[in-house]
Length: 218
Image 1 (cartoon, rainbow, N blue to C red):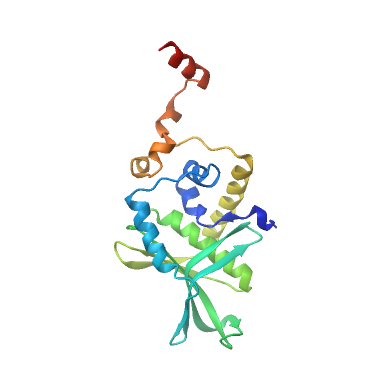
Image 2: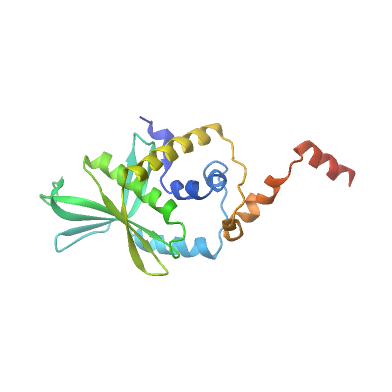
């Protein structure tokens, strides 16, 4: 069990799954670089995160920006949207005097090219909901902006294990305060952190001392 001061942000799972170096640059070094992709994503999330909104439609309660956390995983954050579907096997909500099954929905810009990383993030949200509400969350959905449709995600044991392993590694790296080296890939060219990360430098076999001495000689 983690203390609240040790909680890491749930939004970090997606970054961590795609690139551990990018995650460390954001959450350890507190760096950020916007491009049109990040700006479009922020606009999309602002619409989903209309706080303090809860509405009921034909047996379904829709809640925006629901704050969640897990002591076991040491994480906290917000769900974009959680739908509570009326279900006798669900969790009892005193305000609505009935039982409902939680169904988290995460909004993403683009076409779902990082669906594995996105799935890990929303599964982490589901595991927080399970811990907080003492229930089982079997499914959720990713809503991608460009195709403008949902992709339903099953929270399998394999996916849950990836969440646990990622959370453990995130805490280890965070407390070490060490930014991992870059692992070059096709995604580097589209990454908003390219100019901060400078992934090409990681390919150099020369030490920092050699690099500095060469600069002084020139």
